[in-house]
Length: 424
Image (cartoon, rainbow, N blue to C red; front, side, top):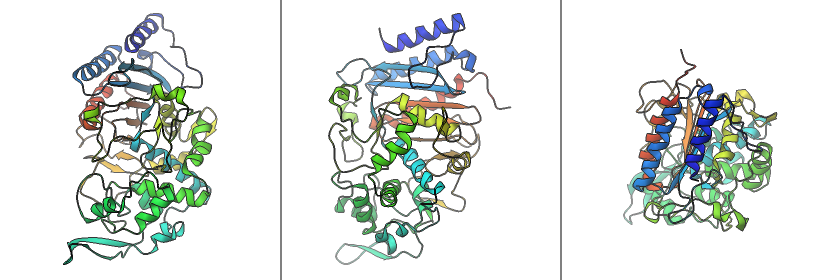
C-alpha cells in the first residue's frame, strides 16, 4: 500500500480511537494530530498538495514530518525514491546539503562550552594561514587579474558561524572572489576540510570580515577549525558528539553499507544541477567532509537533532548543549551588519549562529512566529522550528531546481494546520 495512504489511514484510526500512534524504536514518540493541536483535514490538504507537486514532476517523491510538543503529529511519504524507482519510504536517505550547517555549528558551540574555542577569537588562532587575508576590490589590473588590498578587520569564529567572514561561494553569483574560488578548485572533493580551509585562506575575500552577511563557505572553514582543535576528521567529531549520543544512525558524510544504497533518494536528472555541479554521490568515499553541505540523513534522524535543539540542547536524558547556548545560537547576531548580494534569510529574518532567525511575525512572505529559526539544503530539504508553538516541520526532497517554490509552498501549508495556537 502507498505509504501516504498508510499514514493517513493510521491517523484516521488514531483520531477515531483516541489512541496515540505506535512509536518506532529509538525515534520520537508518535501522537494523534488533533490532540496535539493540528487539524487532520488541513494535514490532508498538505499531503494532497505535495502529491500534486510530485504528479506534476517537481520531484520524484517527498517525506514530510510535523512535530508538536515533542511528538510526531504527522508523517507522510509520497511519490518514489528515484525517478524510476520504488515507492518513497520514511527511512529514505537524502543529501541534506546546507542542513549540515546547524549540526556543525552545534559541534563548534560544544567546543565553545568546553573553552577549547572562543567566539571572538581570530580564525588564525586555530588555522594560522588566515592571519593575513586580502579583499577583492572588484577592479582588475592590466592583465585582467583581480586587484586586492589587505584586509583591515580580523575574521573571527563568530564571523564563520554567522556568515560575516567575508568568504563567499563560487557555485553561484559573480565577482572576482567567486571566480578565484572556481579557478583554484576549492570544491575539489579530494581536499579534506582543513586542506580546503587553508586553500581558501590563500584566496581573496569578497568583503571585509564582520561587515556584511554573505552566504559562503564559512561553515566549511568552521569544520576545518573543528578538525584543527580536536585533531580528528569532522565526521568522527560529529559521530562522537552528536550522532551517536542522539541515536542518529543514518546520518554521515557517506553511505558505506551497500545494503543501504537502495534507500538513497535521487532527483530527476534535469533538476539535479546545483550551479555548475551535479549532486554528490554518497556511495563513494572521498577526503572531503564538507561542514557546509556534505551530510546525508533521514527525516527520523534529523528530527532527533531538531527536537534536541528545541528542548534546549537535550533529548531523552542526553544533553549535547546547554539551554543558554541554544538561546545564543537562535538569536539574531546581525545588528549593524549589512546584507550582501544574496541575503538568503529573506525579509523579516536575521541570522544567528547557524540559523536564519525570524525577527517578528510580520514583514515576511510566509507564515511563522517571532523567534522561529530555520535552514534548508541546496537539494530542497528544509527544517523550521518554532519555540512559541513548540512546533517543528521537516521536508525531505531531492530537487535542486525546484527547491525555492516547493519550500515556500511547504511553509505556507504547515502553519495553517495549527488550530490550537500557543500564541495569544
